[in-house]
Length: 151
Image (tube, rainbow, N blue to C red; front, side, top):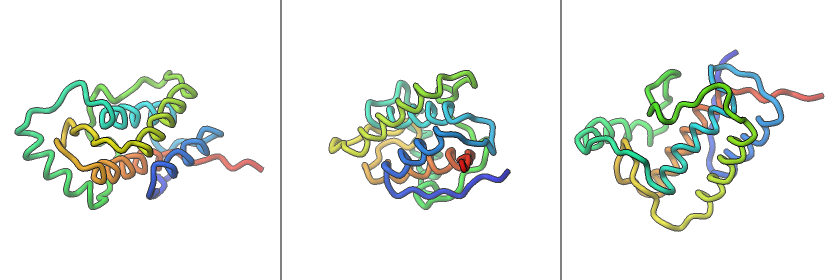
């Protein structure tokens, strides 16, 4: 089964897709919906509340800025791309709890007027840049899940 090519234009679209997948899905990758939701929550929460740790400024100013350009253009990430180990969760994660958590964070992102926190990898971002990154990141991961068709 191949990965789906998803594109989101709003946080509400991500929420709707997660709610659809929570009714049943098949995997085209290694992570469950619960693991994906918890992973996305790590980054959504970090942008809203700050990250527990930042990469050194030299990494943010060089590697981070270079990677940011591609990600803002919507370049596709490869399966298995490196990520913060703190954002990877075990398979036995509580899926309904993870889905609920990510939906609350998406609602907060939709409603926030405040400046979001810097990225641990990219440094200072505008809220528009954060939104583009969050939308593309969610499309990447949720594309590995296929909603079940119910008759």
